[in-house]
Image 1 (tube, rainbow over the protein chains, first blue to last red):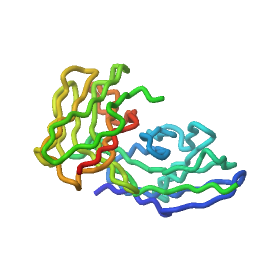
Image 2 (spheres, each protein chain N blue to C red):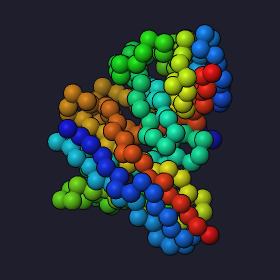
Image 3 (cartoon, one colour):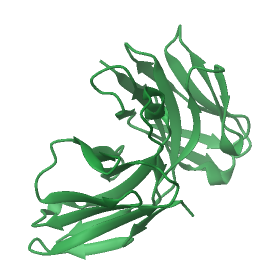
Length: 116
Length: 118
């Protein structure tokens, strides 16, 4: 079975300090992994995606994530947090090659708070 | 601004009303989705259309009726809803061709319709 676990439901950082949002996945098939961000009362916006190319993926707004197969992790990082980064972040896996082809599996989300 | 447009932004309806949610995209995507999202929760898949045909129905109650009139439009018809159906309804679209790799295409979401059932 496929699953996604976001290890922290809430992360609080100070503006200008690094951000780390943790995600572990479980998949019997070759996964594609995504990070989406959702600001209040908005839809989800794609930050970055991994689809079996480079293991270090760069996204928008200075975010990046590293795919580590040995650790089944896909953690999201940013060197310096900005106030506008405060939002809900979802780690998502897409599964191809099973009966669930095409379905997305969402993590429970991590709320990022950025303090001035 | 998103490339997926949803109307209305907000909707309040009674349990006996009939209303429709609308979604439009002009990116040439051939897969379109309806998701339901409750507060502080991830989106839950309701329906998927692929090439204007319903391909996934996640056992959604019949009071929700999707429709895909053409490749750019997606509707969700609502009838006899319950208060627990109050949520943010998100539409999304993605690239889809006949190859399996297109199932990894990212979704483009609209900003949603905030539905309140009274």
